[in-house]
Length: 91
Image (cartoon, rainbow, N blue to C red):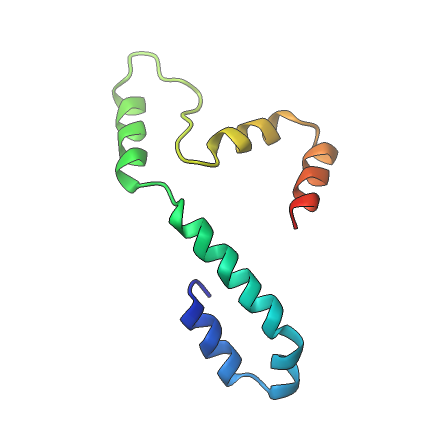
């Protein structure tokens, strides 16, 4: 499921008793995903980073691209239990 119309289709096809259980959660999730999609990284920026890495004399181990790149890098530096705690708080 990627769009609000996908959520609508799932809700229309499902058994009514299950739909009633999950409808509000699915709609909330769909709204969050729509906001996230607005921030999606432009593929041209990713292509630029790949080109830079491939053409560099001494390429870096990592190239940060996109709005979540710095946060992901920060989480990777933390112990797993701390990263899990932070991610759990976001749910």
